[in-house]
Image (cartoon, helix red, strand yellow):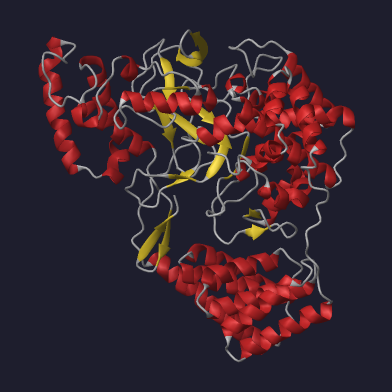
Length: 638
């Protein structure tokens, strides 16, 4: 099953011989609030809810903690670094995380790791100590070690920044003038080595990227869309985005910011603050829960204002809850952000009105002024969830998850009057379903990374909910695709093909006709997104890449009078593909745009050269540009 521990709730009810009756009763309930209330009462009745949030962690006397740290220091001085790490770890295990002893043990362990050449672990502990109760008079030591670790890992520009902070802190240090002079010289020497590494490289000249602008300006009703598009309805595809005038390849049609976002995995370090989401390494952990990390203290403070201080006490339990852990975390993050913004009474009023109102499919998500804004709660909350098509067992499962999460919140001291509990719980269920469809399954436009500069294979690193981009329907032959840095949080969508007036703008939901046969594509669309695809490649059953026509003939020339010109330009394009490397495609975009427009008007698709040109344009729109230097090599950060 795609959800972790899916049978967690149903197996308990099956053992009690009530599962069948539960599903029957649940299926008869007509409102989200009644389904949540039924589920909550059921889990209470069968004693399936935890009684306390207490975690079995007892701290020893401070004298014991300090003695373990001093034992680590003795081993460190004896250069027995591995044993020292073990001693410091034991100290951390029995120390209160709010004490100075805890912060000093982290810094000590960081030093031991550095001598073991475990530079990333050293960096992580040093940054952890920075956000703990570490003495300010000693912080210069941490910044020096952070700089040294970053330099050894190849992040020399970051190292230079931390060396600068280290030097700025020296004035506050109680140290003799001679010692201070010697220490300053050592740090300056290390910074100079970093500068030498940078200047020693023939750095790739970056072409400055102009700020992307929506073609025609902003749409008056949907600010994240171009003024050259509008919403429309079709029988087969429902609501969609249509061109009101001709749109050319390269035109920006959408610039969207996620309403809510969060890391998709613990394996890739990303700042947890909703307004940042920058990738990094050895990030600052929250000093209380230690389960979320931030790129700096500013992001940590902003996240707390958005509600992390409320979810912090229950993060451990949310991680243990069945389902998709990161999605559960994101659902709680979403609720708390809007609870703090609106207050409980207004929040419940909005979600209750939404659940009972009849909504026009074309204007779903628009506010009372007729605007569709990605930063508005109702816009995100009203995104298509296919809730009516969710099977009873999955819908019940989501209700159980919501009951658990709300129960954790109440146990932590969060006050919710009984009259609001069903509304909040039902809203959590809807949030989970919206996230499941729109940012877990539909993640093609989410921030991602490529481990090789020339590789088209990317790995998604975040769950992101883009309300405006969600307006675009799927096509197995998309005419718009994401543009810019792959890891960007803000997503720019550009046309990659000519889009005549009246044509629907479509992106891909993860499958394109070149790579998958029709049956496979239709299966993905039905299984994941519950729709049948009516794009041209599916209707006409276009062949996959190996069988796409690669020659011009009377069968695929649409305009015979242009045959000679098209033939000549095709020969030039073939030569172009032999001479130009993929990393240089962006320098030839105008040529690629003109060639694809020529073929679009004069050659029947599918046609191999058209598809090749289309792939080149896509590559050029998302070419990597961020690199981190490491000795004689570089680390690609996109």
